[in-house]
Image 1 (cartoon, one colour):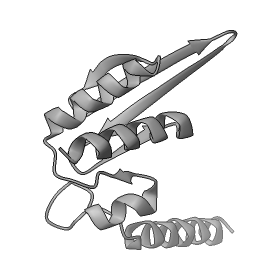
Image 2 (cartoon, one colour):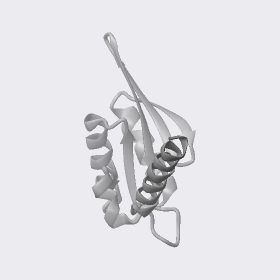
Image 3 (cartoon, rainbow, N blue to C red):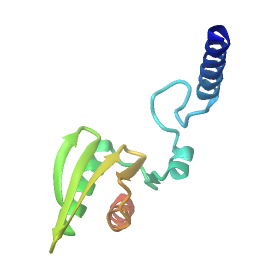
Image 4 (tube, one colour):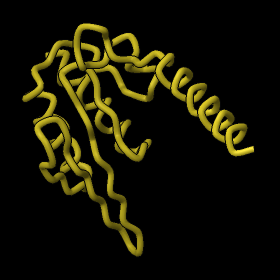
Length: 124
């Protein structure tokens, strides 16, 4: 009986391991970055034109502050955005690169503000 239970546990773990390792990731094979064509499919917003990471960072911080968000440095590729009104508070992390940005948790208001600012300023 003990041997039968152990065989069942090993079979289940093996199956989970095989299924987990077989999944495809949106990361390119030769780097640890997302491919731009995969950015939209996982709720990343693609930046339409070429900008440096520093310029993307500057536009994100400026646009957020202009719309009442408190923008706080978090990492070299992320900013924490906070907005307080009445009895509510929103805290969102904005992850970005020179090709895309993503809000976590997703915030439609902030997404629209950032997308408009990045695409408008990237046209110049």
